[in-house]
Image (spheres, rainbow, N blue to C red):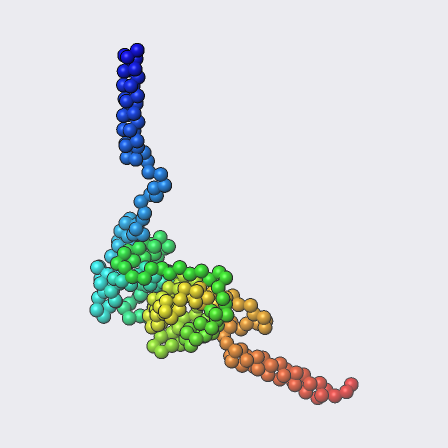
Length: 262
């Protein structure tokens, strides 16, 4: 009887020891529940950056230098220029220039979308403003028109048809995407002033992009838009057409009076 009790106590003690060891080792051996995968740092893809470096060294060093620090009298440093400015100049075909000092005008992009993404990743790796996120859907058109009239219409015209500014030509905005509008506002390309968040906040930027998108395809309630060249030129065209119509009517009446009654 005593041997049986002794064996039972020994078994219970052994089981207890094993249970304690399992409980002690469980946190270390079991997979951590709810543990998220390692967070990404937002760093650009190294392969994309390397591709961008190769493209940069092939097409940009004559103005910006092989190290992107710029060359005096040729081109500025791109360190700190940011992905936003790079994306704007490349997607609108304003870069690369045919020769240093040329005014960057909108044209067909020289690079493919993949190449542009690589160049943007490379220049963006030096720091600077990123590509801004803009959401014009549902933004206030009236607020966008107010902002455009007070900040942009002086050069680009209220219709976005473009115009002439001091020392440069203000381009039409009929091909600008919402992202390109936001990039131009935040970076201030060429002679255009730069507007920070204190000047135009996120909601105002969305409204401004929404108005530019509307100006590209407006509701021409009056009929013939005449290229949306503005109210004064449109009025002159109307008077010109009316004058021609009146001259035609006067000539018809005069010819009939010459013929007399039959």
